[in-house]
Length: 298
Image (tube, rainbow, N blue to C red; front, top):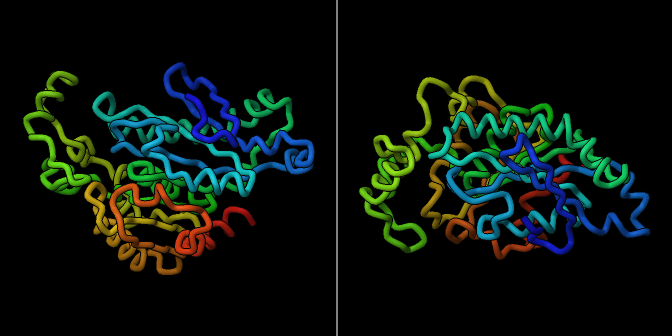
């Protein structure tokens, strides 16, 4: 898949012959005046894509927050874009397994991959990783922060789906989304019968009850903690896709179980995807991320 920005090189390793990881680095690192910087290990943005865990891909433009590219370009950072198997073709446990496999690839194989792709000129600083993502990707960013709190510096999640076990997902979407009426429930059922040849399911019922692995709030109750560098959640107050109430619930939970964590919930006017027109240096955004940037870069 081609890069969404002409400012970045996109190198794509084939991973287990099935899923792909896109790796971006700023083209400015190829310029002669940046050779000294180029040989210094670069920080990493680990970015997960949205799509309800059931669609999209790592570079799908409608699910991409452009300010992440600005952030990487300004800090000469490497962006790692994992893909994962979609729901309906797999389970949420498969998706979480894919995320862990990608994490292992980043640490085990990416250094050699970058050495081969750049003739040894580009190195990744595995001690400076920040996980980021939008919507379902925000959910995965939160999950990876909880799973690797000692290895990830900080976490950003944009309008994340904090909990898929809600009536909105378990009982079928009954409210308009992006000012469009939901599909009739029997439409989803017919589609699922064709795809899975079994009883129709909605997203929430694809999350098992016999494990806490898919549930960030339950993991917090059981003692899991986020990276000490902090967590920033951005959410539109008019979001009809990912309930902002669950982001408030995450903040409340953290105030109870981890009050020392630097957690920020930034609420703005707008729908799901409200930040697509945002610029990195917009005051509200720039101010919100200063803490996690410091934790990531210093």
